[in-house]
Image (cartoon, rainbow, N blue to C red):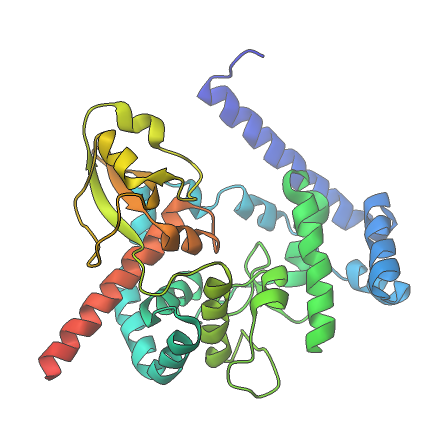
Length: 345
């Protein structure tokens, strides 16, 4: 196949997006959405596998609105930006200040989460800070609209979002929530920690023991659920997350991976021209597995070595940019909170 020039690729991408947008608009206006074969298959599955009432599911899906702006949003995510543009979105003085306030206001709950799950307060706080600005911005789209739009009118990831719609209907049934009422992100992420429906069902916890798992309005549940999510994904208490590094020569280039799973021993990285500039406080054996991360700056690149806990952060969002933003925000929160404690003493 002949390689496309960047301008041609952009043109094709734009045409595909427009085709999807007009397709969604046409279906929404057509009025026969629930008669589509793929929608009928989904309804059949909910009835057969989960014993939903056919008329109820059909009516619910007929009330969903196919939104073209949702498809627009998912085709231009923040994670497509270079690091030097991405970082200033999330690691800001305003987000740090609000994070320190969040930590003060919820210190007892954060401490209890750390004791139970081993995840430090700054990481939990940073996740909620990046995801929803500490609960202030939980999303403006109805989750039903997002999941129906992406499940049936976004072929690239339709299978995934139909699965999330399935989980969402099960979740709202289990939690006794009206599926028409809940709002979230354009991708259907919900509440203060922005859990997708499958994560909500699997990892959300009732951390204040009031009989409900409420990630929209209950900060205790949000904190406990983030900590539980990290613990279940293999967070190692007290272990390092990432170290700044510098590189020399060219051998290191072949060790840069898109996958963030730590698979390369530190001694192999060092032998390939990687110098770890900021070693963790605890001595890390050179046999420790890590990953080499390259981030684009305005003048070139910066390099980091990510350990197991960095990979765990990426289970929340698979982008290296996201994980690094969470890590750096958490680091700054810890630094400033510790400095404030020293002044008080």
